[in-house]
Image (cartoon, rainbow, N blue to C red; front, side, top):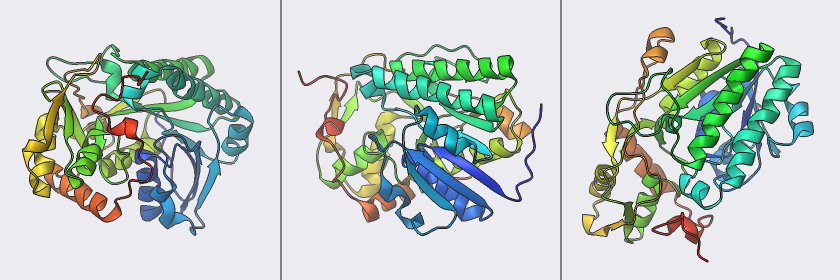
Length: 338
């Protein structure tokens, strides 16, 4: 079933909107579509940052609710008053999932289940935000939407599980759900645990920048605004029960990313320090995004080098290290201190 929303007025419930992608999505929506109102529910866990949305505190189209998506009573009150739900809420730091998988099971699986149960009752539209990591490491080629799941870490396994749960609810209960999977995002407001902001932060301080293994792990990088635009196109025109891969066809290995950042910042590559690789570290991710490009006429706009310079400039102008825990900056954050 192809569902087309005529966007004259819309009430969105965004989960996890204080995080990196969620906050950028809210900025994208309220900047470009003044007829849309957004309610943001966020549990204020690691990765959440109110400063990401501080510019919107006086906006009449934005409302924040503190809460967890596993809270069925609260979620029901919010969902009944919205038109669509977009689920960005997730524990997503892979290294942390290796150290403590339980919180990933709760947020990424139980949280999705809670939303689905309410969606089933009130017949709302639901967009589940997933990841390319569900497919695991690819030696050759790119994964399309029908590629098999082969997750390599607890985080990826919980996201794959959530996808299977969503699909089962579509088939069993005939509800209106669509799944998106995206490659590695970069851009403003990203939490410092991730490669690009962590590299920028450490380079600011002229501290050693840890690179797992030999830095040969390949990711397909997309500027966060392009991801937000793709999610919006899926919200409007995505086909119920379908999934859409989102990528910029921009595969780069980690060492090249770090070297580019240091070059732009005028810092020496002597800051690079190769460290022990993490367990289950996939070598290469790659998505085939032909489906969303052909069926929804979406295309990415950002040039990688321009986007990277924009990202570095944003962090230079908005640097704030007060919320950074030492464990995030450890060379091997998946290891316990005990």
